[in-house]
Each structure stands twice: as C-alpha cells, then as structure tokens.
Length: 493
Image (cartoon, rainbow, N blue to C red; front, side):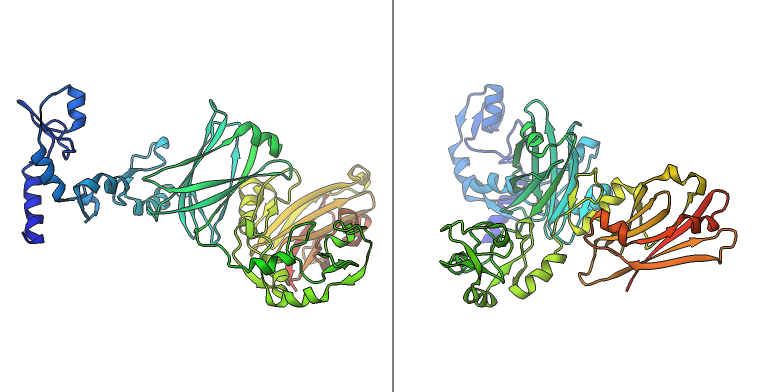
C-alpha cells in the first residue's frame, strides 16, 4: 500500500474511533482489552473500573504498524509517529500547551513553548529581566514566603522560579529554556549576603516538558553569607559550548603557585627558579616552594612566552567569554561587563555588573539617586550656627550614560566641601570634571564657580583635603533668608 494510502487509511480509522478507548475516549494504549457491553478499553480504564475481558491482540498489531498523528497537531505539530514511540514524542512535543508559570498569581493563559517569551513580555513585563550578557541579578527577601518567577532574556531565554520551602528549609530553583526543548546546559547561581562570602551552586537548565529543580539549604545559606533578611542572587546561564580550547600543557607553567592565577609580566623568581606573579611576590619573604630568599630576578624567558598565549578574562568564572593577548587583557578587565561591582552605599550588600548597578540604585535607593549630569539644591545656611554643622555630610549618586558618580557635600565650622568621585565609568580612559556653582538667589546672575577633576580611588581623608571648598564666611554673602543654593555639573573633559 502506498504511503499516502496508508496515511488516509489511518486517518479514516481514527476518524471512526476504531482506536479510541470506549471509556475515556483517548487513543488506545496496549494492552487493549475487549470488554463485554463496553468495547475496546485501555489498560488504565480497565484497572479503574475493575473490568475483565479478552485481549484484542489483532488490533494491537495493526495499531503498532501505523504512524499516528501527534495529538498536538491542533497547536501546530505535523509529526506522524510510529505508535510505540508516540507517548515519548507527545511527552516532549514542543507544541504541547503548558499553563503560564505565573498561574499562582491568577494568569489563566496556556500556550506552546515558542509563545512563552511574547506572552511574558506582553502580560508580565515587570517580571522580565533583559541583558546583552547572560548574567542576571535578583534580590530575595528570605524572611518572606518567597515565590519569584522571572523571564531571563539574554543570549538564551529562560524562565526561573525561586520558591521557599519552609517545611524543608530550602530554596528551590527551577530554570527552564523556553526556546529549546532539547536544551542541555547548566546555569551558575551565586548567593551574596552581608559578608564577602559567596555560595555557588550549579543548576540544570531543563525544558518545560521535563522540569527539574535544584535545592539549596536555607539555614546554611544564611550562615555562610551572613544574610539577615535579603540575599543577592547572581544567575549566569551558558550555552553549553563555551569551553575554551587552551593548551593545558603550556598553561600549567604559567600558574602562580600561590594565588593559582595565570602569571603575566612582570614575573619574578627565586634563585632556584620558582616563579611567582607580581601580586604575590611583595607579600612573600621567602620562596614557599624551597624557602630560598628572593632577589629582584625576573623570569624574562617566561615573560617572553606570554606574548603567544591567549589569556581568559579574570572574570571568566562570572561568564566572560573573552580570550585576549596579555597586552590586551588588563585594559579589557577594567571595563569588562562581567566585572562585579558592590553597591556604593555602605549599608547595602547588593553586588551586580556595570549594566545593572544603575538599575539597582534606581529601584532600591531612588531617594539618593540623580539621573542626570546636573544637580541643583538649596540647603540651610546660617553662619552663626556653623558650629552645629561640625562634620555634617551628605552623599548623592549621579547616574548618566552608564557612568556612576558620588557627590559628597561636607561642612564644618569654617568651610564647606564638595567632592565628586567616579565610581563606575563606561569608558576606561574617560576623564571627568565637576563644577560647583554657588548662586545668589537675590541676583541669580551672581555666581561663584569652581571646577576640578573628579576623583578615583581616593580615601575619604584625602578626598576632602583635595576637593573644592569655600570658606563659610564667603558663602554667607550668597545666602538668602538662612539658605543658599548650589549646583553640581559633571562633564567629560
């Protein structure tokens, strides 16, 4: 019989319900039993109703020879599958409709795998995290009954569910790829609390047809990260083909025996030839390998070989895929998009990347963030009360064009100080200048303006020794009704 005729024959039998269970009206499954006064029934219905009958072996044999259309053809599947493989196919069919993962919040939508991204974007946009990288940051209050669902939109598109299981004292993570039903890769989840410790775990990324969960002990997590109520979760997804093909036989000779990172010039050695990186050498009095004293000898031969080696970025464990020549790596690592940044506020434990630290400031500290390169304010000022303002200090955070600055305003009995620090910059070589202008509000055209370079990596004591300052008795002449107005303008030099 021709293929087309077999297909037509099969469809006709299905249409006439020859292969349909008389009880549940689903497709029959082996063993098929012919029940008196009922008809052909599947195994489940026979067990459920305690039916006895005769095995219909001939019908089973015919059914096994046919290619049956997938039951999800109504949602787009065009596959016809040999009967014995049909159940496996339908269990993993990408056209199998699934309920929305926000159903716990009342969403009644159902759809196929490929429609999940558009549904989330349209109806649950506040639960969508987007980045060009594959690293996402979520803050979790672990004292609450946590049940978080987010759509992670990066190089892969995944939905993550984080749920607190109070009975078993665990956090459950479920990560599903909504584009690829045959996904086979992991994501790395890192937890940060109040201290510098990080709890890292690997979570399997599964499909919506084969959901798998990873459990993390909550008590241990709190203890190790010193987390009181909030933890910061960094999620890094990978495509499964990110392994770098380094020549391990060569690279092993470039590993510093102390810090285990790859050595870069300058490389130092003891008098017996053991080599160390430039970061570890000043911390060592004697060679830890042979206890010999150090001189100033450098291993120029090893340094020369570094020119032919591609180094992975020092943030490769956070997801950076760059491999660079030694002379390029330092410059890249300064501005690497995976470089971790702590929140600049002293009382916040959040850690994120350059791209999401600004978003964090907006969401969690918006009362202290100015989304502009210009800030103008009026503050109380009475010269006779300056003694009350001894070491009075305010801090604001100015964010624009992916650059983050801290504006510090300080007063004592004699002077008022303004300092602007560059905390994050979009371009490594960018230099910024800040202007402080004092405005006489009685005569707005009368201004006292000074400018200086923005500071980088300057401790607080040095900061206020070098920054812009005005004597308070000068500022008094600009005050009006016990107040004076100033502005801060930041610009690129």
